[in-house]
Image (cartoon, rainbow, N blue to C red; front, top):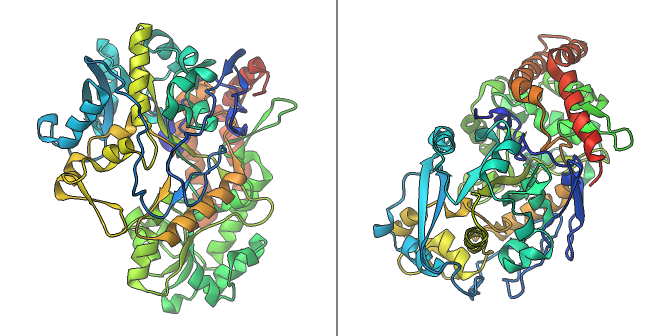
Amino acid sequence: MNLSRRGLLRLGATATAGAALSPLLAACGGGSGAAPATKAQGLTIKLPTYVPLTGAAKPDLPGTAAGVPEGYFTYPKELFKAVAKPPMSGGTVTMASKTFLPPPPPREQNAAWQEIEKRLGGKAELMIVPEADWPTKFNTMVAGGNLPDLFPYVATQGVNNLPAFVASQCADLTPFLGGDAVKEYPNLAAIPEVFWKEGIVAGKLYGIPIPRNMVGGLGFYRADLFAAAGIGDLTQITDLDRLAEALKTVTSPKDRRWGLVTATGGLFGMAIFQQLFGVPYEWRLDQVTGKLTHAIETDEYRAAVEYTRKLREAGVIYPGSEGFDSLKRKNEFNAGRAAMTSDGMPAFLGPTGYLQTQKKIDPKADPRPMLPIGDKAVAHLNNIVFAFNLVKKADQAKVKETLRVADFFASPFGSEEYTLIQYGLEGTDHTRDDKGNPVLTEQGAKDTTVPWKYLAAPTQPVFDASSKEAVTLVHEALAKMIAVGVADPTSGLFSPTEENKYESLHTMRSDRVTSIIAGRAPVSDLDQLIKDWKAQGGDKIRAEFESVIQKTGGTS
């Protein structure tokens, strides 16, 4: 089973290529109470019932079932117990996870690991694989029939035919978690249904989601620089012509300041502007006819390309920044060389985030998350989950034990278990500051590199102990973006042609659009690009997706 690289280019479209779910699933709203039945590949599936956890830490800023996360200004001083009794009765559960960090101390030298096993009630045998080695290791496990009890599936590093893989190798979790059955696992039940939809494969629930914050974001802007252009608040900008004027006013080459700084592969900021113009995320589905229109075929995409090109022609975009790497782009934005940049929401928080970094450089700096502008703006739902985890096919008792272990790792913010997973043992791995926030010790910085958080996870809170302002800004921005969020209606649908052609079509599109915006090709070349895209596989991909949509009835 060969690895799929499509998801790497799809920038966060983490629902897998092989899953055959209804194209409307990701667009359906969530809510508490009994979960609705969902049609996927002609089958009816009941998603896990969403049951908010009682006794959990009270957030400073509330979350919603639609995916808006909870916000916390400080860490709860009084922790609660999220798991009533150990999920295991001795024995071993095998797990695998990839890591982005150096290897942690082994169990024998890791107090946090030992405490986690004590609370689990059994041995946690975790295979930790460096991120770069994961594709090879995953294929080796599959080929050798050595899959662990719980393991991740990531769209960029998985198998081409996911339905066939899960049917032969993985446990169907529908009878264990569907509807009210999930109540046996309270922490998993506290995950809203919008995240569970990402784990549906071929009309059945196979995946346990690792929730994220739904959207990658619209980038960031410097409110202080906009204020100098006469805009005291972003709500004063009601259309994109006004935004362009503001960016022109901010731009002052003699002061080494421009409206926007971009980076290699950034298409001169198109990631921001295509959302502001209302471009669909990959595809747009006509819910009446079941027909698909690709993003590049829409009037909104053409308008975004023309708009971005005019900004470049007006000298608004930092000259040469299309060749910057991400660090150079970030450094220039931090230094006040640009009023806007494109980056993901996590880049804002923490001691190395935009807010605190820029305040250190200039106390008057006022970076903020970019917000939707105008009534056509959308936010692409490209960050719903980090990935999802699969359970190896086994007898009912073993599957239930594995789910209880996953429920442990899904313990929410403010619980004893979450604190142990994230910060290790108090006294050994962390201490509390004068506000009660956990601070890692030198040993804790090592012990907590074990990637437990990638095995299962609660909804991801917005928390920054060092800045109430940062938490408020990010929470408000996420709420506004999620409210206008649009999903890729083909997320989860399987197209053999797309599996084979996505990378080449993506590269062609990126290169040609870059040439148009850079002025090396006329805007009319977009028409030829669409023709070439259709001829070289786009139309066939569309037909394959529409065929699946017809089989599902196109409803959720």
